[in-house]
Amino acid sequence: MKYVYTAVFSPCEGQFSVSFPDLPGCLTCGDTLLEALEMAQDASEMWLAHYEDHGLKIPESTNKWNPAEYPAGSFTNLVYADTFQYRKANDTRAVKRTVSLPKWMDERVSEEGLSLSRVLQDALSQRLN
Image 1: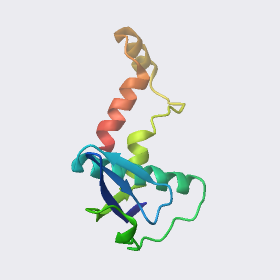
Image 2: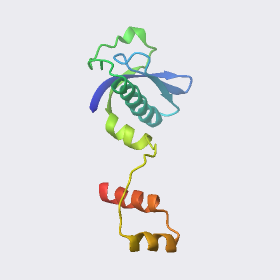
Image 3: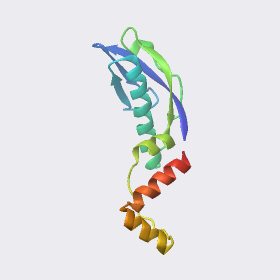
Image 4: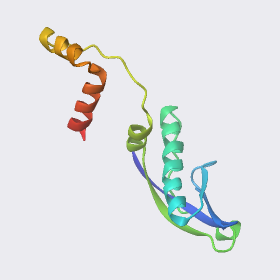
């Protein structure tokens, strides 16, 4: 799923802290503004993926931040979150699959000392990207 949420960036001791008024408990920070933006995307994707995985209600995206609640110099920015891409980049669990191939091919794989799993993963990665 794809989402866009308002993030609040607040200067804090040489860093930027980031919070999401619509995503309770979703907090992060970065040493630079660029790092804070990257961390904001990662944190929101992780938070949203968790909610999706557990069948929890995803909050509506609003712009309900109150400037008086944040330190001077705070500002908002929209952050894009794609939970499919997040899972693709972070879920590296291996799954077992049964595959069939000709006997001669299996023998050649063994002769070459190749890992059939690695060859298949490499071929699928190239094909799917």
